[in-house]
Image (tube, rainbow, N blue to C red; front, side, top):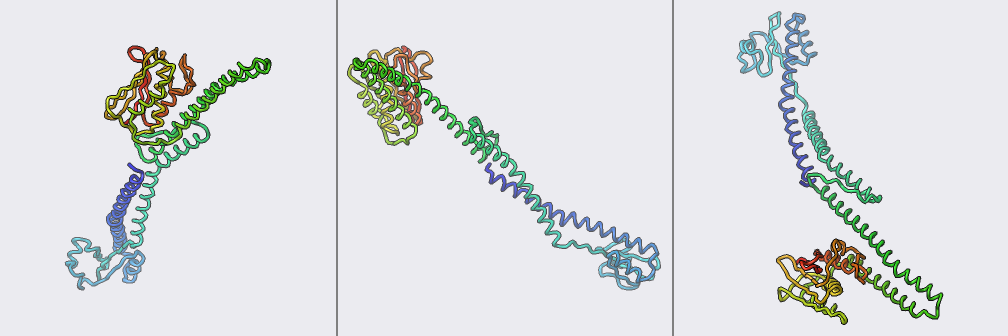
Length: 407
């Protein structure tokens, strides 16, 4: 339930309870209390009159004034209040409509006494308002307490995360509201940032390692050329080769980072055409490997970035061609929700445990002459398209790569 509705319903519920309680006090409990006080005051007045200590009319009136009792003194033969039934009714019932008949000991007159206790209207309104205000304040305190607690937890998690404690997370609770959803979004963001930082640190370490090898060879070749400048032509060729490797490494790194940070240029893409184009690009001279493309449909359309999808399929085909003995097959088949491009070669396949690590940057096979970013780039392109890359071996032991793109 949303926080707004929690607070709103709590306020409405407590206001109704406070209103009912205040009305009950004002029109039931308070009148009953006042009637009890009125009867007690009448009893005390009657006891004082019947004690015989007050024998004159002036004394009785003075007593009544001191006790805030209203009296009317009549002789026994005078007319009683209309509808009272006379002195017999008072004697039998004691009181009638808040009036009480008192016959003093001296007996020459009767006293009709009454006590009027009317609570001021302002007091009743103040009581109702105070009850509603108290109930609403209590409702707000109850409703906002979990909100304040969750905000405190979220603030603490963000502060800790901002101070470098990357494991700081918001503790999710069973009941989900806006703050829990915000905390879940924070946790997702924190996990993503932590993963990116770990990936970048790993990438930096790998880049430093990959750069060190050709740079070391360059330094060694320069020293050799200085020692023997007459025979430096071979050293120059070695340096050119290392410079080419450095240039290729930098280009691959630029592409790797560009793919992760750029937006997709989406359009309708026929993967049959993409696979045929990739096969044509990677069918380079000097490598007698037959590349075949098979599709289960005349056209297999997905929505994606054509340049990136071509790059992904080309990388898979290039790897397969490098390790294949004589043939590489590219198969395209689709289901109701996925389009799958399967690239299979007839080579030795992935070594045990290598397929799970092959998509990590700069991880290379034993005979690889590449940089180790090809499959990492394919993995990143697949993720950008909300797809996946699967690597493994067929039953015959050859390598199989599956690029799955949602339709």
